[in-house]
Image (tube, rainbow, N blue to C red; front, side, top):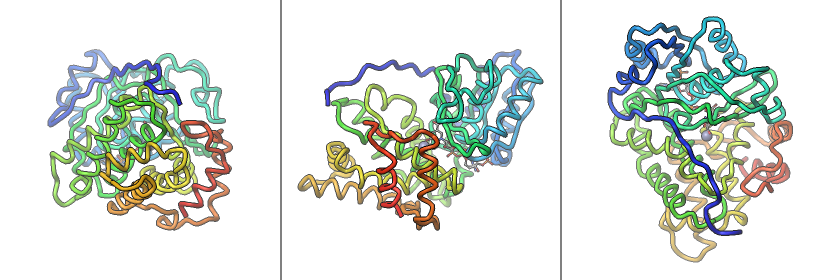
Length: 392
Ligand code: NZQ
Ligand code: ZN
């Protein structure tokens, strides 16, 4: 493989408002004459005060709210919000919630002004994948560090009727601003904290565990996110002892894992996510929990392809030494042990699934045109099957 950072274009326009009491500052970021639609999920933001504080910060602006965005947000629900935006002429959207609410808001922002059927914003066997050239402006108040959706332009939408979980993205779907208040994570249950830790770890790995191109900054940056997560995870997932410093480090690490910095000009591999999305779709397993099941198996089956990076990861992230083969094996083992130390599932059997589910997962990958995955495009359905079986 040729060495050196590949050509890239990088632009991330999202303004970050980080720290304590930052919701109060959003008034300065939204036009005075905006008509604002606040978008939220199942109610956690009403219980932890984020919703009321957002309303207060809007001052005299006109506003309304659309609640009920599901975890793994659906096209069907988001389209109801699109109708509301169109009917009532909202000009600015405010997402208050986790990745699902932010992703749904990205879709609503683009679909509300999309010329044609919004389904054609998607590829993956769903729509025509037409370009998304404009969207309503929106801001976010993040309540769950995990997806980095607060500082990227991507979104993952679930189609209930069509049985698909497909992402889209566009340069016009970055949030204008995102509020990152670590204290908003204090109401998260342990399971969601674990999900966020795993998602952050795996985003970093998808951007890192490929083959070396001598991109020194991206590699060291990714390794430092991984080390940060490993170091703070025990404090982060401790619901009993709320630790501001740990939550602050967690929140910023999660954002950095997928805001485009570590992926600039390097090969990336989104196969763990692709295999995981099918598990969520078929069995309703949380996104983070699918990743902790798939990644260790992915590392085992793809050991040869990822050898050089696995070695680097073992030495630099886990401080392993010895002969190369031992380092690689121990690096995989350490990763799995780390996930288990968080009480995250690392096998299908940990979430009460067995070999009987694999055929349907593979059929889904085929239907969604995920048959040439990984940094080299060489992860076929046959190899996906091996990975799923390894994870049983
Ligand atoms: O719905 P509410 O009541 O708000 O409760 C949510 C939800 O039940 C709850 N929650 C969020 N913040 C809380 C809280 N509960 C208490 N206190 C708080 N502060 O947590 C539950 C899960 O929320 P969700 O938003 O679904 O989780 P997450 O942020 O992990 O998002 C998952 C979605 O993001 C997609 C996933 O596929 C999945 O659909 N992803 C998006 C990405 C992106 N846009 O770049 C990349 C990721 O890889 C991922 O695929
Ligand atoms: Zn993810």
